[in-house]
Amino acid sequence: MFSRGKYADSGNGREMGSKRQRLPDSNLSYYGASMGSSYAYNTSSYAYMSQPPPFPVVRLRGLPFDCLESDVADFLHGLDIVDVLFVHKGGRFSGEAFCVLGYPLQVDLALQRNRQNMGRRYVEVFRSKRHEYYQAVAAEVSEMSGGSGGSPRRSVPRARSYDDGKDAAEHTGVLRLRGLPYSAGKDDVLDFFKDFGLSEDSVHIVVNSEGRPTGEAFVEFANAADSKAAMVKDRMTLGSRYIELFPSSAEELDEAVSRVR
Image (cartoon, rainbow, N blue to C red; front, side):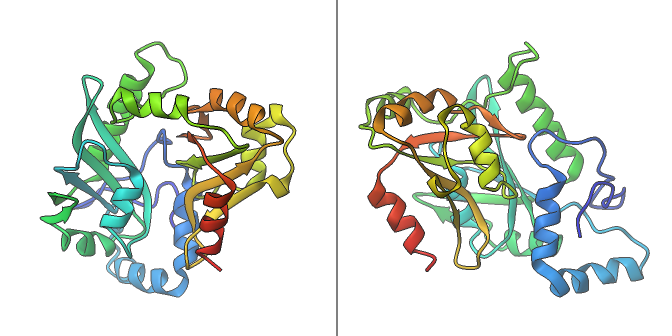
């Protein structure tokens, strides 16, 4: 099971140091546990050789400028994605991202996607290292907080019209959440919206066909006025992740839930 301190200096990885901004250890623990005996087998060879496993991260380059985490997940379909970190320069998305995977051997599988297409653009996939990833995290946190020391908020790589569209969207009392920590449960979402008096039955965590959280959820509010008021929480943080909110509908909620039945 992954935990802090699991990765130490080696040819491809370094010791995991202080807690990073967006990747709680619980996420790594979740994926390590979910892979069970398969993960234990894959890491046993490192233990046998008395060498720590490399930190499982790749760098993507050439991403579309409206790329989202879900697009990266589709591009790396079949791999366990623990975190996606988009790289910004001067407040603009650079077309690069780091992707932390569930375990080291998946890095080789990700590299097989090199120069495959995402939409109309081909994406380059490179092997990366722990310190490069954490340097990017530090740079992103600094840029998001603007040096003010406040709660970091990532600049979303979309045009202004994207936000205008959310502001103009009709509210039906349902919001879709994106960017949830994979370890987040209903209690975490209820705490995020603690001012709205929600119940557990109003929170729906979306999972994939294997029962793993996708990082999305739907929340049903008492009325459209409450869901519109809750949009003030858009891009605020839950744990160490910023959360995006989108006006949704009962139909979209039903469709998301029915996909895994």
